[in-house]
Image 1 (cartoon, rainbow, N blue to C red):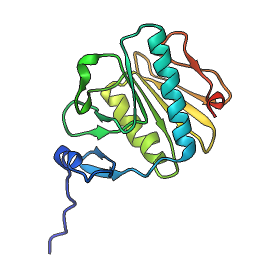
Image 2 (image 1 turned 30 degrees about the horizontal axis):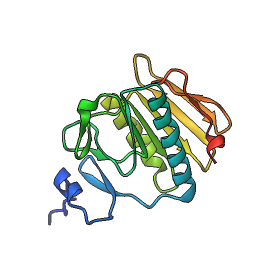
Image 3 (image 1 turned 120 degrees about the horizontal axis):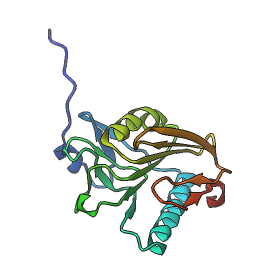
Image 4 (image 1 turned 135 degrees about the vertical axis):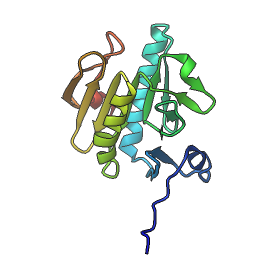
Length: 180
């Protein structure tokens, strides 16, 4: 008797989820997303404000978006993620659906239910897609892991009390403890 085959999901399945149901499509699998915690929302909202204000103060061309915001990471209609914060500097990647291709900077805020996804699966996908900068903020451990994927890869770990330099924006630093 043949083994039952696992269903492979497509972008059509992703875009036809019931209203209010959030998921990400990675390698043909849909991953349900739990509602964010209060601390997650505080960090996300404050980061959005800081980044958006910085871009506006420099009269920059980049755009910042917070979840839910769909990112078709490889612009191949097979991989849809919803990073907590996405910064896109190439406006030609923006469509009515979201971002078609790799954002310049992605920030994920880890929770107990998504840590493996952020620290393993998404790290690999973001690196492969050529995201320039990736941050994983871990409120449980009060640390931030940063990755720079241009030229030579660079990874650093910071505490919430550290001034964290933003690679793609010269002169911008973020201290997570100031956001809480």
